[in-house]
Amino acid sequence: SSFAREFFLEHQLPFRDLEPGLIDCCRRGPGGTVPPGELTYDVLDDSARRMTSFLETGPIIESFFLLSVLENLTPEVIDTLRISRLDHRELVAAARKKHEQIIDYTPPRVFDGNRLCIESFSPGGQRVIELMMREAGGLGFATMDPRHLLLALLEHEGGAARTAIYRQDLEPKKIHQHIMVNLRGQAKKDPTRPPALRDRMSGILVTILEHSSEEAESDLWKTVAEVHLFRAFLNTETFALGLFRTAGVVLDSARETAADFKPGDEPEPAISGGARSM
Image 1: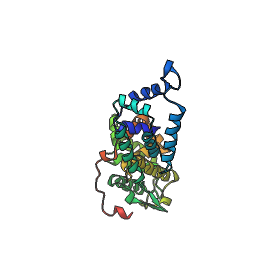
Image 2: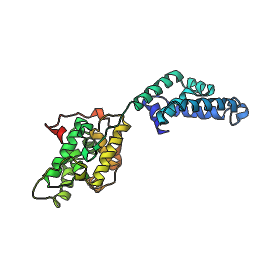
Image 3: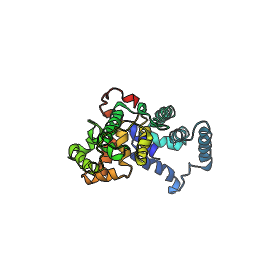
Image 4: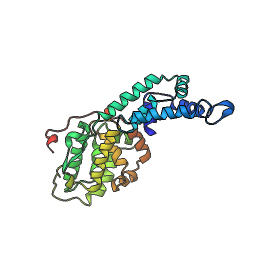
C-alpha cells in the first residue's frame, strides 16, 4: 500500500531492494516451484490466523494493518528481511510507534457550524486567512472565493506557494497582477471586509478549506498550515486554478514543490492583533 511504501521511505528502508527478495521468497523452492516448498498451507494458515486475530484487537486502518503484517510474518519472510539487513524487531517497533502517533492524532476542524475555526490554523495559515479576507474586502466582495485565497497565498512570505513560483523563475507580483485584472471587473466601490463565516464563502472555497484539513491530516499536523491550503488549492479544479495556470505556472511542478514542502519549513509570522476573534 502507499502507507507501507511511505513507512519504508520514512525510515530509509531499501524498499526497492527488499521487494525483489520478497517476490523471490514466494517463487523459490525445489526446481523453482510456485509456491516454494517451505511455504506450506500450514505455515500460511498459521500466519494468516495470527494476523487475523491481531487485527481483532484494534481499529482496521492502514497503520494497524501494516503492524499486524509485520508482527505475524512467516519465518521465511523474516529471513528475507535479515538478508536485506533489516531487523524485524526494529521494524515492528517503528511500525508500532507510527501507529500510536496516528491513533492519538485528531485532525484540525476548519468549520464549527457556520464559523471558520481560525484556531485550527497555524500562525502562517491564519495569516493567509487574514490576507484572503483583506483581499476580498478591499475589492468590495461580500463573498470570498478561491481567487482571494490565491492572492493571499501569493502575498504570504516564505510559504510553499511563493517557493513554487520562485523555483519556476516567476514573480509572485506579476501573477498577483494577473489575478487582479480578472477581479477588478467585479469589484464594488464600497470596500467591506467579509467575516470568517462559511456562508460568506463560495461553495468551492469551502471545499478547498475542508480539503486543507485532510492535507494536514496526511502530515499528522495538528493545525492547517499555509502549505496545506496551497496543496488543497492545487488539487481542486477551479477558475482561480486556471488563472494560476494561464499566468505561466506549471501546475505539476508546483504540486511537486508543495508535496516536498513540510509544514515546519515555513516561517510562522505573528499575525495582526485580534485575528483569533474572526
